Image (cartoon, rainbow, N blue to C red):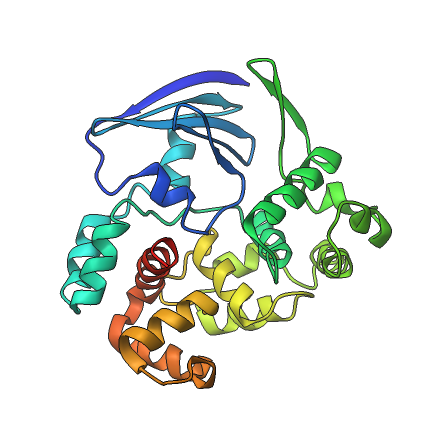
Length: 289
């Protein structure tokens, strides 16, 4: 492990708070100095913004700059994306102005699958707690600045874990789902490498839906927030249903608004940038509710 420091100079569309508080990730935490600290793959990182620069320090077994470039999607032109979405209507313009520093992270596919299974019918603090206990129990320990950190456990590290042991970590009804999904991946019923190689989003989504504990919303979150990075998908939860109904559909009873209705509207309105539009709208509405 090598300690490394990186400065991203005058980077645009990069606000740590927007990135880490918009609901896409669970292993980043705000520190007392307003920086954020997190772990992804085998990299432990602290990030803070100073004027227009992003200051990064951490430890990595490889080239941390390269890992940061991939993880934070730095090769994608978010300024161009925001300019395109802003032209759609005033709602998009307002939501983008609020969350202008959002970037969609390229998170490890396996970690994203399990994290969003754990997220079902759950709240952020509890999700984070479960994931940290899972990592501490079965991941690999890394020490940085005298503090212990734990990587997210691989399928192989979880192969002998029982349902009861998952339950002991506080997973509740998700214990069996994590156990079954781990078995499916280990047995190659679902090949994660082949998911990356398949350009057909519908086919990949159908395979994700075959995993225990993965429903439509979780599948879409995995597609959008992992290294699969399918920007056309539009995850729908309570907040998204509410904002889409309030701004566009305007049904007196939002519970009558169907997922199919929202998806059709999102596709027609936002096209292949629907996933990013969803993040701007979701973050804006949730933070200002």
